[in-house]
Amino acid sequence: MKFLLDLAPALAFFAAYYLGGIYVATGVLIAAMFALVLVYWLWKREVHKVHLVTSLVVAVFGGLTLYVHDPAFIKFKPTALYALFSAALLLSHVIGDRVLLARLPQQAIQLPEPVWRRVNFAWGLFFAFCAVLNLYVAAHYDEATWVKFKTFGFSALMFVFMLAHAPFLARYLPQE
Image (cartoon, rainbow, N blue to C red; front, side, top):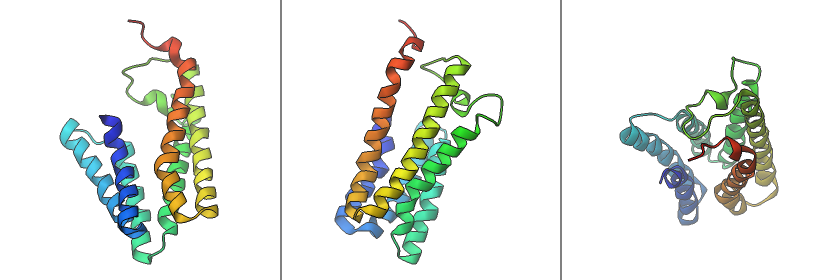
């Protein structure tokens, strides 16, 4: 359920794009991201920082897209967001006593510090790759292709990247 809820703004953006174009889709995305923050607040009584940061980045770049009437800003949003995530993850290797992923509440998995460092570094590089890939797709393909790739391509890439971690992390999962 959580996965579908987290994917809802992207799916709303995709549907709105095909029903009304990039500007309608941008407005829908802004509203859907803040609705996601609100739904989690009402459901769990917590605000996920990633959702809040994403909502703010969407509001800035989406707002610029709507104000200037130029889709280049919303196309740059994934790059800005992925670069922000990458920088946060990679900088946590030199700032603080633990890497960022190790600081998150862990319910399913407990890892030794060196493993957290490797996983955190891998995710930092992955998000840097995604930031550059978005720039490439936005610059070299038409808008409809970019929308499809943004909605489904990055979700698929993230899913495959998570699956690639499974064999490496399996030995640290709790044995029932």
